[in-house]
Amino acid sequence: MTDTETRAPRVVAAPEPPRRRRRRLGGGGPRAGTIAAFLTPFFLPFVLFYLVPVGYALWQSFRVVRRTGGQYGTSYTTFGGFHQYAQVLQNSEFWSSIGRIGLFGVVQVPVMLFVALVMALLLDTPLLKIKAFFRISAFLPYAVPGVIAAIMWSYLYSPQLSPVVDLLGHLGLHPDFLGPGAVLWSAANVSTWLWTGYNMLIMYSALQAIPQELYEAAKLDGASNWAIAWRIKVPIIAPSIVLTTVFSIIGTLQLYAEPAVLRQISSNISSTFTPNMLAYTVASGNNYQQAAAISVVIALITFVLSFGFMRLTSKRAGL
Amino acid sequence: MSTPTAGRRSASRESLASRTAVMALMLVLMIYFLLPVYFLIVAATKPQGDLAATNGLAFSHFNLFDNLHTLFTRSDGIFLKWALNSVIYAVLGAGVGTLISAMCGYALAKFAFRGREFLFSVVLGGVLVPTTALALPLFLLFSSIGLVNTYWAVFLPSIVSPFGVYLARIFASAAVPEELLESARLDGAGEFRTFFSVASRLMAPSLVTIFLFQFVAIWNNFFLPMVMLQKESLFPVTLGLFEWNGQTARAPLLQESVITGSLVSIVPVIIVFVLLQRFWRTGLAAGSLK
Image 1 (tube, one colour):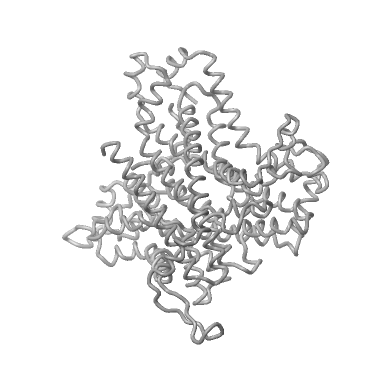
Image 2 (cartoon, chains in turn green, orange):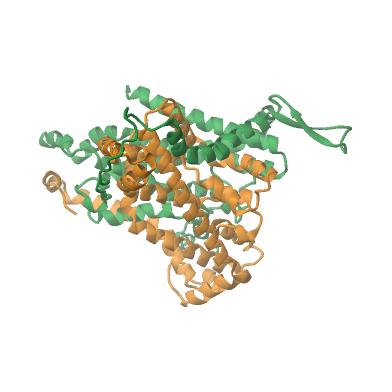
C-alpha cells in the first residue's frame, strides 16, 4: 500500500548563501563549548528532575526515623541500612498489590498486544476497506487522559447508569463490574481500551516499512495471506512487538489513575490496590522513607522485567 | 487509497467469506473503541435527571447548552481555569521540551565527541524510568525549596522527555545530510545558526511529532500534579475532574458537570489528533526502529 497522504512531507530548505569567512582552517567539528551549549538545556533539567530524584529516593530509602526519649521525644532521621527494604518485603499489602498487578499484567498485556497485532495485520492486508477510519478510531483513546477514560468507563460499569448493564439485563445477565472479583478486570479493560490503538499503530508502522517485494516470492508460490502474515510479517516486526511489550510492562507497574478513579465508585478497590497506590498512601502518612523504598523496589522490578524481556527475546531471535 | 497490483491479485483469491469475517471483526472492535465516547456525547446532552432514568445510548431532552453553562459557572468558573492550566502546562511544557530535545538529539546525532554514546545510553535509561517513581521524591525536593503548590512544580519536570531526545536523534540522522552541515561550516555559519536556520527546518515535521507526543504526555499526566498541587486554582483539568468525580457521592448534581467537563476536555485534543495524524505515524515508525 502506498499511503502517501499520511507520510510527513519533507521540507527542503535552500542552503544558506555562501559567505567568505572561514572560521577555522583545520575544519573538523564544533568546539567543546558549543557542544555543551547544545546539550546543557536538556541535560540540566534531566539531571535535576530525573537523576537527582532517583538519587534522593535511593538515599531516603536507607534512612529511618528515630525518636529521642520515647514516644513524645523529638524525631530525627538517621542511616538505617536495609531496614526500609526489609519492611517492604515483610509488608503483606505490598505483596498483594504486586500479585494483583502481576495477574493484571500476565493477562491484560498479552490480550491487548494480540488484539493490536491482529488489527495491524488486518489493516495491512487488501482484505479491508476504509482503513483510515479504523486506524483513527482505534487510536482515538490515546488522546483521552487515563482519568477521563476511567470516568467514562465507570459510568458504563455503574449499575444505575450503564446502558451496557441494561442491555445485558435484557439478555438475562447481571454482571457486577465493580464486584470484588471483577473490578481488577474492569480496570484492565480501561487500560486495554486506552492503549490497544497506540500499540497497533506502532506495529502497523513497522509493517508499512517492509518492502512489498518480500512478499512477492511467497505470493507466487501460492502462500495465503494468513501464511504470509504469521510466517513473514510477524517475525519481521518482532522488534516492535518487543518494544510495545516493554512499554506495556512499564505502564502496568505504574498503574494508578484508572484504579484510583474506580475506587471512587467501588469499595472493592483499597487504597493499596496497586504498588503505586500503596507508595502514595504510605507517603501521605508522612512515612517518606518507606514510600521511597517502595518506589525503588517498583523501579527495580520494572528494570529487571524490561531488560529481562529484551534479553530473552533477543537471544531467542539469535541477535 | 491505492493498492499495489500484487495485493489486488491475491485479494481476488480470498473468499468473500473471509472478507466479511474480517470486516465484522473490525466493526465489533470499532464499536468497542467508540462506544464510551458515544456514551459521553449522549450523556453530556442530557439533563441530570435523565442520566439514570433514560437509556444511556439514546438521546433524550437536549440540554447540552444548559450543561455547558452550569459547567463553566460552577464554583466561580473553576473549570475554565483548569482547562487553561492544562493548556499552559501542555503547550508551554511541550514547546520548551521539544526545543531542548531537538538541540540535544541533534548534537548527539551530528557532533562527534567523547562520551557521546554514554550520554545517549543515559538518556535511553531515562526512557525506562517509571515517571511516577520520580513524583514522590520530587515532591520532597520541591517542598524543601518551596516549589510545591506552584505552576513550576508541574511545569519544570514536564519539559524533560528522554523519548523526545531519542526521537530527535533518529530524525536528525535521517533528515539532515552531513554535506549540508559541512558546507554551512565552510561558509562560516556558526553551529547555532546552522541548527536554527538549516537543520531545524529539515527536522520540522519530526519536531511536530516530538511536540505532539510530549503534549499528550503532559495533558494526560495525573500523578505528578496530584502529588504536587493542593491549590485548586493550579489544577490541570484531569485532577479537577478527578476531584469532582470523588464528590459525586455527596453531591450527585456534580455528575452532569463531570460528564460534560470530560467531553469538553477531550474534544479539542481529539480534533488536533485527527488533523495531525500523519505526524503520529512518523513518530511511531521511528519508535519501532531498533
